[in-house]
Length: 190
Image (cartoon, rainbow, N blue to C red; front, side, top):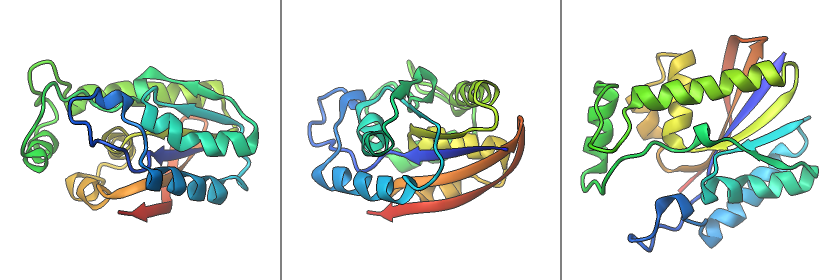
């Protein structure tokens, strides 16, 4: 049995709208919430910690890595979707993407593209660390698309439900690469 804890990042600081969103740090509240998440998860038998390369994901998982004395392995394919440009009506944009997985703005990614890369990254982890417990730090859209792939009933309404949950942790279980189920185990709603 392989267990995956998908960890959505804590509250990011987007106060500098001109800054690169990949490098948005956590707010002070986000750092405190990350410590709460780490305290919750550190009793689990986690063998491996993997993170999106984005700063907010790395900062979220760092307290857990420090408690467990484990390195953080970076995986580019767990990054958040690339939107392509600033979107004023973000909810409308999300709704359109969830209704049409092939829709993308110029220089952006479709949900289909994001789902394909995050599923491939997860399947690689399942093969490499079979029988282990893995914590994966990522992002709301990327994690939602993983959940949608394994459970198609997880859709737009669920994505909107968890939009303000940062951090949010979902436990997935697998027998080799066979998906067995999911359970939401931790969240802080902001």
